[in-house]
Length: 148
Image 1: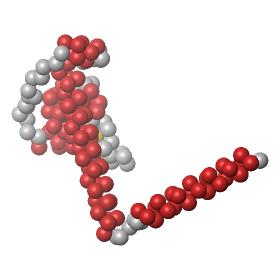
Image 2 (image 1 turned 120 degrees about the vertical axis):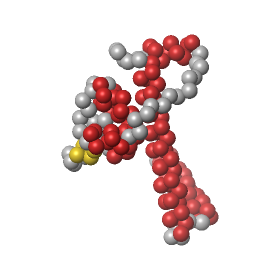
Image 3 (image 1 turned 90 degrees about the horizontal axis):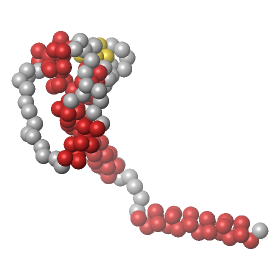
């Protein structure tokens, strides 16, 4: 089973959405198991996903790398894995990672906005006064221990 088919057994809706475009080439060579969500219920059946995909393939532009970089990448290829497969998997993983990062930033910005609207937070002077009190207390306790 190719790595794309193995990746499809992940139980995550996001993984399914990211990996679905890679199914057309993979599915023709391998029997891919039904995808399930955490509860074990079927999430998407391959036969249901494939007809909705655009079956045309696309290529990425060729990239030039130093010979040392190519040798380094070829040194980590798994048995039977091609450079093309490695690059394709890396691109899919990088795109998924960037999507996750973007969603994280969006959630963070929304949380900051909610916090501002709810009037949360403290004035800088309050925070600095609290930190100074903690520092003074720690210095006092350290002096008491040293005096013993």
